[in-house]
Length: 260
Image 1 (cartoon, rainbow, N blue to C red):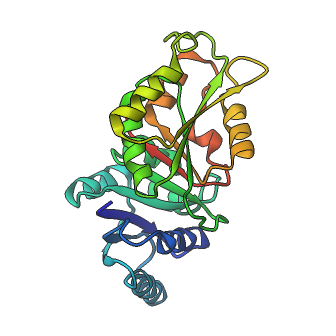
Image 2: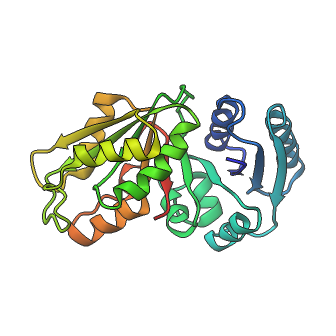
């Protein structure tokens, strides 16, 4: 990850995300761009200077700020123009906070509209060494998505725990019939990455995706959860009550979403 974008409004939510970044292993990030999202008064600018000084202990740091509110289109322009690899931001798990100030909505608004991975850090989460990454999958586009997940996991030499929640009705893609174990072995070999596990979460009723993911997190204790836009979009089409980023953003571990 050469460049990351970090929105900050100097709240505890934003500050905790900065502390998370500071705790990441050396060499993971080269440059941090702070996105200033608060009034340009003397107190805020002084705090911004302190945040820059703190981050400069480990990274090259730049600041972007504006007198007008940021929206998803503005953020997308920054992502493209600055070649941003990842957005890291704090989240309160509720509508509001820093994302409300920047985007007029919540974290999912950013995820939906910016063509860049977004890593959301819960406000009370303290950094833990990333040893296991949970990857929520419906098994469609598994090989393509795993290529991205493996690339990210290599940065930490982390185990990837694929979690699939079943039953889902209707099973449009026939995912319950495929030989998933064989497919995963092929992915391991093709990517030369063996640290991959499979967890099948069986729920009482159809389409209890959120419940299955929560049980997986409680049982397996991953240090991060990965989702794709694909995961959300497909579910929206095939089940009545879809699993969205809104419905799981309250989870107490970091959530990274990749665009399809």
